[in-house]
Structures are given as C-alpha cells and as structure tokens.
Image (cartoon, rainbow, N blue to C red; front, side, top):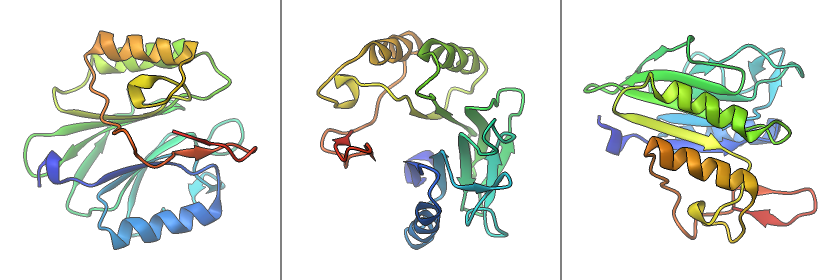
Length: 190
C-alpha cells in the first residue's frame, strides 16, 4: 500500500452518537483505512462505537467537557501506527503510519472556534518542523477562504492562509465538494 491508495476521510461529528454509528458503517463498507474525526461522541472518554477490537484510536486525554476534540481512527489492521505523544495536544493528534513502504506522518487538528486561530497555527508550525517529508495534514480550521473554495473570507481564513503559505502546504479540497457542516440556522457551509 502506498499513500495514493490509502483511503482517508475527515469528519466533524458534532458529538453525535448517530454520526458515530454511521461513520463506522461507512468506513467498514467502503474499506476506509483512516478516519480523521473532530468533536466525536464520547462516553467517559471513549469514542462511542468507534473503539472496539477491530480499530485503533489515537486521541489525547479528555477535554474540559469530558470529550475529545480530535482523534485518528485506524480501520486498516495492516497499517502499523506509532503515536507521537510529544507532538500531540488537546486539539491536535500526531502519529506515523507505516503502509509497507516509506513512513507517513498523519496530523489532525481541530481549531476550536472560540480560541484564537494564532494559537493553533503556531502549534501546527511547531509540529511541522518535526515531521517527515511525507505528511498528511487534516484540519478543521473554522475559517473561511476562497483557498478552500468558500465564497467568503474572514480574518481567521487569512491567518490560516499565511500558515499554509509559510509551511509550503498544498490544499487538496476540490471545488464542488459536498458541504462540510450545517449551522443551527440550517445554512450550509463548505
């Protein structure tokens, strides 16, 4: 297996038990290798429905709400995974996958809406300095920018754009992708 054949999905689960059950079914039926999840439904710090004998989960200790902000769920039993706890924080999870050839760092970060974006971009910049040349970085940045095909832009989006430019990252969101979240008012966002 190489990085091009790995199936990776990313999802904000909005702490929903139903979403957790659906994600498990989706990942198993589509043979997804890795799920990068933010705000998963947890019960006493356990990702409900996602932590069982056939999966491995990388997460940090529970947050102030007894939940988890970000986690990596590995469905492929043939992938060797090693956690990098020295780089992992409450909002960012880092591990390295060995898909049978050159290792790949997996980083997943959730930029919590009510915290300063600069704290998260600073954390990603520090982590980036310790990563391998082959890295998959998934982020829920809670920001708007045409760079990831949103028709609006805000200051948080500009801050994240600067980090992307400074680190030489490549955005792989494609124009026309499905909407990625719904607000309480019902309007969809990308």
